[in-house]
Amino acid sequence: MELEAGNNIVKPIKKPLAKGERSAAGGTWCTVLLPVAGLFLEIFAVDKFSGAALWLTVIVFIWLGCFADFKQISPDLSEDKRAKLKKLRFIPPVYLYVRESMTAGIRTKGLALAMLMAAAAFANGFTQGLLLDETNIPPKLEGAAVGNMDDFKGSDSTIGDKLEAWFDEGKYDISCTHTGDIFSVTFSGTREGAEAAVTIDIEHDGFAYKEISPEKIVLGGSELDDEDFDKTLKEIFADETEESEESE
Image 1 (cartoon, rainbow, N blue to C red):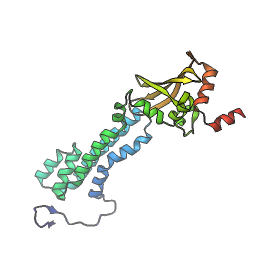
Image 2 (image 1 turned 135 degrees about the horizontal axis):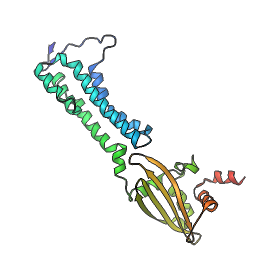
Image 3 (image 1 turned 30 degrees about the vertical axis):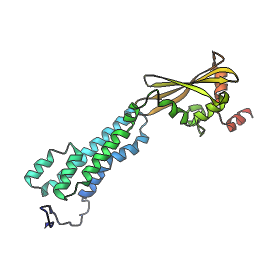
Image 4 (image 1 turned 120 degrees about the vertical axis):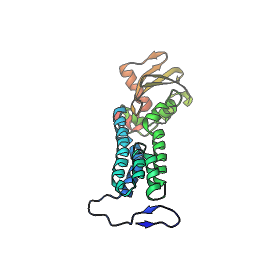
């Protein structure tokens, strides 16, 4: 053991890790970075159930990281310190803050974990889903790629650009309603002088977007059905290359 000058922190002399032995420092850094891993892995979570499973796993692994670390370092702690640290294992940022104070005299990891957990709590899909409403959904839909709709996969054009090109003078009004998991956004204006409206539904299950689908088109006061609906839908959203290929 060596005593660091100027304080009462006793540090164990470092020795090479034996084969298969885990580094306590490396293990705690893995625990600190788990919230970041959770945010990254959200891209593979397709609905609220897989999202909930993901974040439950992240939380459990953070706890397990603290429990495993405590088991590894507890033999080197005094009885008082061991008893104090044991109680903090369920509060990971506090555990790492106190743990680092006891063993290394720094508090970087505890503070880092606290900040990353706070960032993940705000940026995760569930929190972002709570922030969605009838005001911010329409701009998100306008900026979404047409390729997000099933019948137009691969198109990089935005829905807003296509609607602007279709409505007279590129002008239209927007209204939005919300029922359950469905946001219905209606774009209304004129097409060749006649009243026109296009309604697109967005399904969001509280964690992830599930589907974007055109629901209704109204021209001259009449709702289009079947073939007329499909034809007008392609007229609005299909790229020029797609239209030319179909005509051939």
